[in-house]
Amino acid sequence: ILGQNSLVGICLEPLPNSTSVVKISNYDMNFTRNKIFVFAAVEFGDGEPKKASSLSQVTSFDNNGVIRHKVVSRLITALFADGNTIFDVVGNAYLEFKTTARNLRHLDENVEGSAGDAPFSLPIEIEKTASGSSDGDTKNSL
Image (cartoon, rainbow, N blue to C red):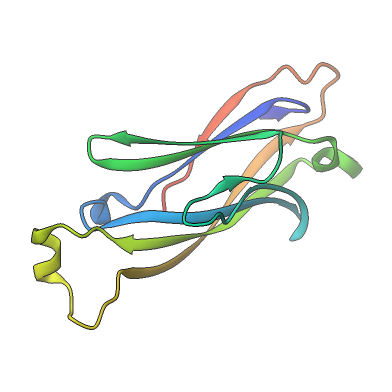
């Protein structure tokens, strides 16, 4: 359970059975309550994701050939309004095929690099606290 003003860390990566052939090329990430937009953590950038607020940090790193994307964001007061105990992290990740010689042999000649998009949603449990000192990490794989 995360408290008010704490940080949430969310990692995005393709599903384990697809990491050898696809990668996440761009994505957006929003925080919603009851399907209503509250906060934009990440927005689509020009070829790569970019932070949508000074309250968010976006990084990518290579983990044994799999590019993982990590978003760390501060939980804003509006998420805790009206005694809410859950908010949703929602977004859309664009996938593209990795272009190695081995993978190209398996692709249809008509494919132009895009593997499609992958919407994601992750509920996060929260609790309004006086100090907001809780920290937590949550992992979401596409």
